[in-house]
Length: 457
Ligand SMILES: C[S@@+](CC[C@H](N)C(=O)[O-])C[C@H]1O[C@@H](n2cnc3c(N)ncnc32)[C@H](O)[C@@H]1O
Image (cartoon, rainbow, N blue to C red):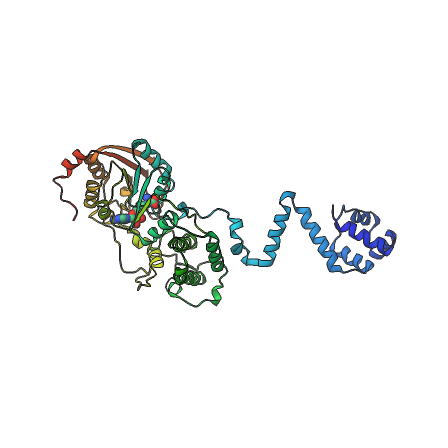
């Protein structure tokens, strides 16, 4: 039923005009006219025009009635009508800015920790890994993720253990752990306000900055890079007004949201050499939480192993020559914000935090690590990429060596999971397997086995 029918009928009756007169003046036949007045038929714009002339009323008002009838007639779920109309109103009012300003309605859930692109992340295997660890280490209360990367394994362990240690060499990962896990206070409304200001930035009005001057048109579309650089500086400028947790949440939110806009295949070793299509940056808050039982470090795993103690230590180091600090240099630069001089086509800063696990020292480093850990169980992830055709993907630690060293620490179980994994397309890996070793540490055996070995530094 269309309400405009009753309106037209009232107008006609008020003017005391017979239906036949309207028919003769408008050319609309009687059957159609009565359907229109009964609300069974929507008049066309042409018909509205002639009816408004006959009744001497404002055509615009009649057209508004007609449009609103059309909208209402298309609503399939009356329960949602009022809110849908409000949303439609906002879409008209805010146009392109609508998505930025109303995103908390569109995405009611904050961004999850596991949604980040990161080479070698165990997001798809996390449940499997944790199941195996808990089954093999039923008496463990504390857990350490020494090479935590994205932190997805720590995330799974968070509610299962009374104490968690999370460590990684990278500054950007460290900020992310603090944002997602560290105990601290933050005001969600305040952060919403800040990011909605960022979401309404107009790049054309911003000046060039360190980020856009270096990465614009390469790793990010130029206007987007201006916005990223502006936001990063602003987070620094407003730092005195933020709690430490809020500061880390804003930085992690920036990384998570720009991750999807990067002109790369998932890391910053290179950018794609073609024009970058503009896609707007719409920040959404990350899923920040606060845990009492978390310790967060940014240290070399071998050095940290001498200071900490944990029932389970999970080890997932890099196994090839690809340094994570080089792959994710752009996030390191963004987080440190020390505006270093950048080198080469990929615009990397001077090397820092290089890992011995990516070099010929990997095996020695691994031996040193497992021989020094104060733990009851050692869990190690390993993937068999050493068969690959590319040198940079070749494993620095061979499977036989890894097994031998773990056996020196205690009885070791090996589990296997086939898994499709990240590669940039150049390398073919056949029968790729993800392996998980779990060693029940026998201190006596370990001490004897390693007593003759040279210790790492
Ligand atoms: C294979 S990734 C770990 C992936 C992680 N399990 C996940 O699910 O995201 C290896 C990580 O070890 C870190 N790393 C490399 N060498 C390290 C070292 N010597 N000490 C601490 N962290 C190191 C890298 O920064 C990288 O994040």
